[in-house]
Length: 356
Image (cartoon, rainbow, N blue to C red):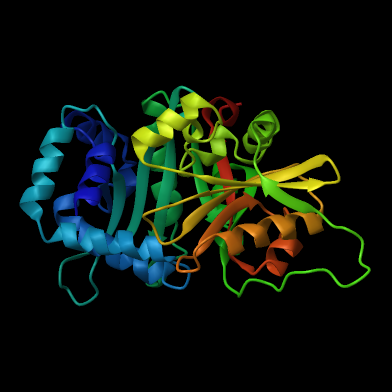
């Protein structure tokens, strides 16, 4: 509950911007489209998101929906959070679409969109998320109307860009976003352990393969460069990668001591050449995180050796998750007992480009 309220305080809008939101709603949609009212909409939004994405929700997504429903039972607390956010100057947390119930039972929430402020290289951008339309009301342009209104809100706040993520197996949504003006920027796949650790050892007479060792301080420059290439800032701001906890040396050690976080590192060598590194970081979420630092064309055997060594050196009580550019080291990951959760397309809408 506390975690949800913290997110709500971060994302909810001020009274001043609620009025501004109303002014930006298109006249043809003013009987249907309105700003999210968390005090009365949370439960309905949770139900709608679960209905639309039930087959693809991961454990963390289901946990967040549970928090939403718990918060919906505490209208006074949500009202208090809303009142505090009035002074924060934040944009609306989202938009909803309503239709009349066919049985005459009043209005029914059938569409939702979350608009979340994010930091983009020192500037505020926005993430469009949780775009959901009830199956009975699809094909009527509701998703497009929600998206274009959200873009106008972001534009009015001076944002340079808006981002969204969409599953690669959702062509209708991809088509809508592209016709609105979004451009595909990247594809990333989430992996999680699904199988037992593969058997180790080499057959007698087999050539010596990659060798896994502990990370050395001399490995850090290459590790840092590879991490930046695999996890660029514009695509990894939402991932729990704490750069200050990674460097070797006294400064990194003191920082890790202060935050009680102790990553583990493995390096893989091919001969005397550093071929890649893997970092483990514990998590309070569903799975612990692995972070790969390696060239895009890392050798498959080196990757398998790295992943297998990490799995053998860690407790087997928790899943391990890894986020990588789509297609990177897929055969090696499957051999090491990982399976895909989903592949997301990152799409960007640049306001300057869209106006041209």
